[in-house]
Length: 216
Image (cartoon, rainbow, N blue to C red; front, side):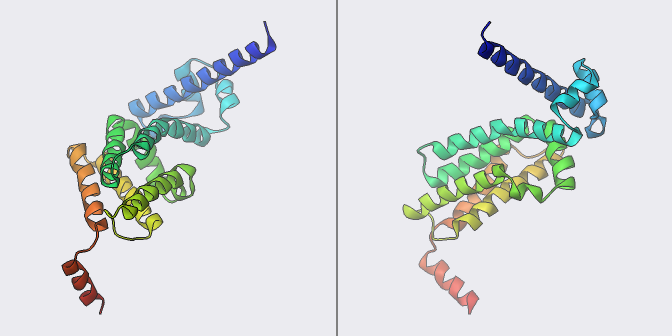
């Protein structure tokens, strides 16, 4: 058997074991909560030796980080489809909020633990430095810039407003995770996009004069 084939087979096997470990973590968290996740319990859930888990992950935090990244990857793919489509900037912002919130609704219990219990409480500010957060802000900023060019949005600092939009979706997500019976996801997505789109639309003469009076 060629060496390359052996290497490919080994890579597939290692990837399968990592996925099995991650699925075990998800089952434990959803069944018994975050405190149940230990390297020993994960190994028992998979049916492997604890040392095998350590071959893939140095500790529990790295394991949970990997589970989170794997769980969030499909969400990024969904919103990237929105960024790449040919819709108007307004429609893109509307679709972003709907897809973003709907994805977390589909996996509510998992992300209630991964994002709310772990992320918000333990490392609330670290996400601002991550590639995923910067990617979302950059892509939303491009959508806003496109709206400015075609006249549907007024001139603003695209990065600052994009960060506000991403943060508002994250804040709404957290509210939905801790609310026993959240509103329909379409309603919350519409609330965010409607507020931002109304604020981004060009100011009329009446709005502009009112704003000038307030600033004097």
